[in-house]
Image (cartoon, rainbow, N blue to C red; front, side):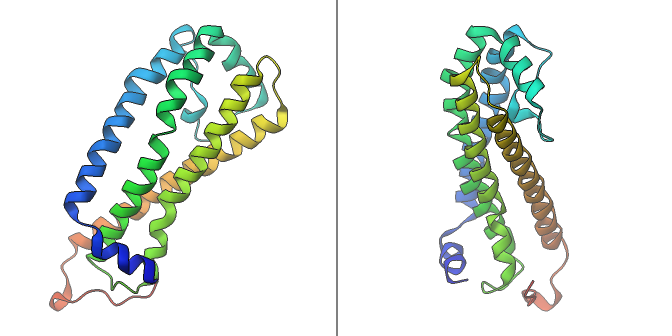
Length: 190
């Protein structure tokens, strides 16, 4: 728990807000610019990142075929470089956000701070997913069933951890909204 106590001393609402702003700007760039650029030739399709329940080998093959050579190049040279920035920002920003929120209601030694690592796991899984997408793009038109399944599994893991983060954030914010009894921190060891 010592690491969380040290981080907790350095985390401020101002830092979390700054990181949140940067992370949100990168996310908006991905959603509004780089993803649409990749899907120009196949607007009815969704990129691997946007499929939280994963995808089949057939879907992967259809997507890579539908976006064509220009879309695959754009995916590799525009979307993925931006998407290699985002997971790190997501991991750092939202891990610190949970630490900051939890610190308002729990003692610094509480085991609940371990849950602040959920966004870091989501970021790690996103990086692994991105590496799988790079392999698929570089090997196309040859597409390995194993690589597709591996990459799809990490898409699902990333999505699961992302949803878990939002649940934890809502939980933490609800705890903040509840009036503190006698001004004391909750002394739970979850």
